[in-house]
Amino acid sequence: MKVSKKIFFAISIVILAQFMSLKAFSISEIDYLNLEWWKNYNDEILVQNLVDLYDKNQDLKNTKLKIKQSEKLASMGLANELPSISFDGLFKRDLRSSIQQYGNMKIPNYSQSNFQLPLMASYEIDIFGKNHFKTKSLKSDIEISKLSQRATYITLTSDFVSNYYNLVMIDKLLELQEELINTQNEIVLKTKQKQDFGMGSIDLVLQEQKTLSVLEEEKNNLKDKKDNVINVLKNYLSINDDKINRIKFDDIVLIHDMPESLDSKTIESRPDYLANLEFLKKIGYDVKAARRELLPSFTVFGALGFNAYDISNIFKNSTQLANIGIVPNLDIFDGGYKYAYLKLQKYKYDEALNNFRKVVVEDLNELNLALNQNKTSKENYLELTNQKQIEDNIYDISLTKENIGTLSNLDTLYEKENKLLVDRKNVENTINYIISTISLYKASDGKNILDKENL
Image (cartoon, rainbow, N blue to C red; front, side, top):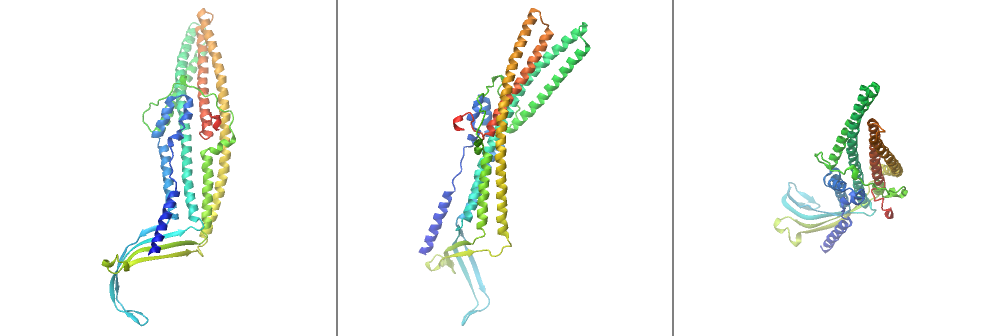
């Protein structure tokens, strides 16, 4: 009895130690929003929208649930490393209808009850680490889920902000489009007046009417794009309200000190890079576990309790029950199942290795593409800024000339239209530059790339 109690005490210590080895997994998901980075855009409305995104977006909520699922799967896998203890109570009534004989001893017909109240324990001694590798594989799933969550945050917030600024752009473009249409209406009216006085041709009138029609069509397309972008943002925020709070284009503050180059090692902190690396480790654990399946296993078993033939005697010292033993097991023939399973895991490892190499190439290409896009967008923005300044000056001069009578009102309207067209292009280039900064942030694993000391 003393030996059995020591065994059960030792088993309890093993259980406690194993559970302590499975570290609790806790993260602050809101940190994945990286609000400190988005504050660089000097847009409080944007930051508040991102907080709402964190509170309401269903995809972000699901990433947390996937981590919890991985944690529970790891806990289930850990159970294979731990002893199992169960209570297997038994009551039975033996009814012997024939004489049993053991040599010269004869046992006549009889009937009796049997009461058993044992605690049953078993534990597979993980000599070769098979179950431990299986548990490590499941723990890798937790890390992969965590990295997947981080990747979802980076992708989803980046896409949300890109759509947000596209909506800001469309607002401004519609404003300029209205001005263009009003200006073109005046041009059509002035051209008709010239034609009525015999100072212009009908061809010129028709041409200006055609231009007006094109501008109206562009306005309709912009309205359609605006509705589509609003619907996308509504889906992100899980709301039905069409009112999306946003900054005005004229209040935008650009980030001008984006890095022109980044070390290729930047990709090594990207969640997709790390997730594929972790998956490679996971498959490695699976290969090791499959190899150890070919080796023998050893299971320790024991029981501690009471066994009596009369319920009134069940807890007496004479009815105490204890036993312990060990069961070795080695499959002699399984039809090649375990060997085939080992080869399967090796093929999966080779596939995972190829996928990891592919991710490295794709991540480097995405980073280089984002750097080039940001550089080109900035150059285009600066060039259009110069053109806009020139066009503004030309229009101001035309107004002065009109006031002193050296230029007609129709010519001034043409200059105004040219100015508005350049303004429209400048709006597009400004937003394109902002989106290129978002793409670079996304390609560089969602880190604050303005903080050069931590790059």
